[in-house]
Amino acid sequence: MLWELFATFLMIGFVSVGGGYSMIPVIEHEAISRGWMNAESFSDMIAVAGASPGPIATNTAIMVGYEADGWLGAAVSAIAMTLPSLLIVIVVGLLFAKFHHHPTVESAFYGLRPIVAALILYAAYRMLMTGGAAFAFDWKTACFLAIFAGAFLALMRYRVHPLAVIAVSGLVGVALYA
Image (cartoon, rainbow, N blue to C red; front, side, top):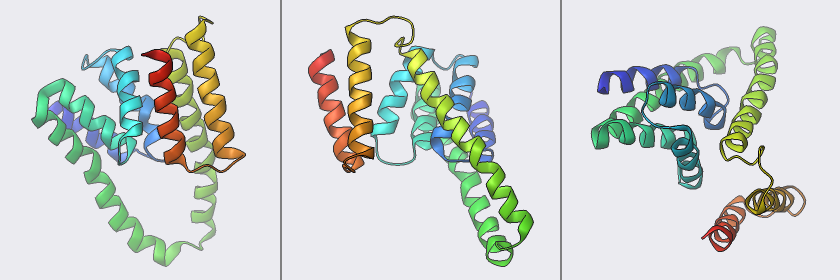
């Protein structure tokens, strides 16, 4: 089990283009298809991972590892998930300083931006679908959409600090769903 966790999260760590949110669908697929957890547990875990300090993909890997094989699974998953970043940042940092103005490098970055946006939107879509909000319109769905709209408005229109939006959204969720 530990080797499977290490290999899975090492692979995910090496392909983590666009940050943690873009890797949520990949982690979800691996965790569910390998039987480490079900879709509902994964969705709940993403909410906790997103509200916790640190990168969401690493937080998620740690929680999946813990669910699969306890504290040792969590440690192995964390190491496997962060090791590629460390190695890649060292190599890319050395190369980027030398080649960042090269036309091919600039073109590659322009090509990666749309896929990163698509992966993030897909992660949001999966969270919506797993929560059931897309299939049944009831009071929970209305509250879900109201919290989403309020958070989006606070962030975009009023430039409220994201931590304040997270805290208020969590408190509203407790008030509404508890």
